[in-house]
Structures are given as C-alpha cells and as structure tokens.
Length: 117
Image (cartoon, rainbow, N blue to C red; front, top):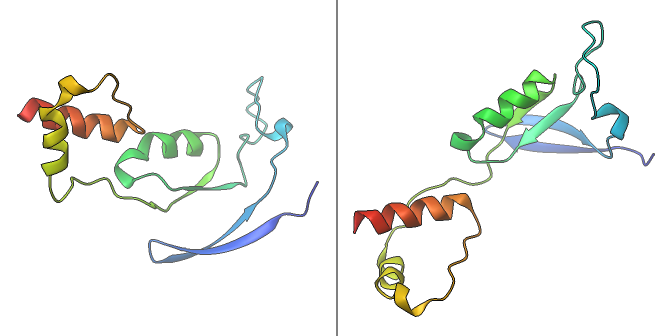
C-alpha cells in the first residue's frame, strides 16, 4: 500500500491535519453488524466540502459509521446578483430543444425564478 500523505488545511478558522490515501475495501464494507466491533469508519477523519446547508444528512451518515467529520464548505449557494441573463433565457425557452443543468442547485434556482415570473 502506498505511504499515506498528510495535509494541513485551515477549515472554518480551525487548523486540521488530514491523512489521506487508499482505503482498503475490507475497511469500507460492512456485511454483519457486530456490537463488539468498531464501526467501519472509526478512527477515520472525513472532510466534507459541500455547502453547509446541504451537508447535514451526509455528516450524520458518516458519524453513524464512526467517522470524525470536519465540515469545510468550499462553496456557498446564493442567488445571483442579477437575474437578467436567466430572465432572457426564460423569455426564449421556445428556442431551446434541451436544457441541461449541472447541479440540483441550478435546477432549484431555475424553477424558483420560472415560477416567480
């Protein structure tokens, strides 16, 4: 197994040392719950980079499996300063054959704006 690397990062004003490297499949798969065994992610630290408002469920799931979770959002989901270009696109939807979104957040904001008009 390759040597694990260390990464120091500043997350939300807190310094964190993070080890990363390959995780053997045997440590990530649970087939039988044994109350005498540690959870599969015990002793592991996981950094979540999702927006704070969207991380709760994922954080809870990882903690349930024994992980220590560091929440370090790398993005913030916010409304645009101007809806001018989106409004123009909405006004000309008849000219599009397809609309492709690259995130659920984009879909949410698009539909909110469409309904508000």
